[in-house]
Length: 115
Image (cartoon, rainbow, N blue to C red; front, side):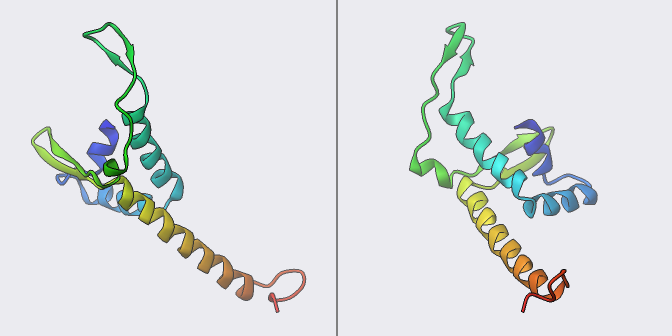
């Protein structure tokens, strides 16, 4: 989560913003972000008060729209909700489907241009 917070921080160099934009169109990043948010809330975690692993509170439908924000090292960060991440995965699917369809008709293969 710490690396994710630094990626979404407001006080970052321009190259980090470019990497963040690239990662938004890289489906494994979006999938792992959504999976990590769900696993962090629903999976077991170590409780120092109990000195043992305890079950998490669980992930509910209302957690889909929760946006994580705060301040770290005097820099504000805001991480989008899981629903926004799922929306980006859907957009990626449509984008890659269109790109696949386009390349199928434009790039010549051993049987022609897909006609």
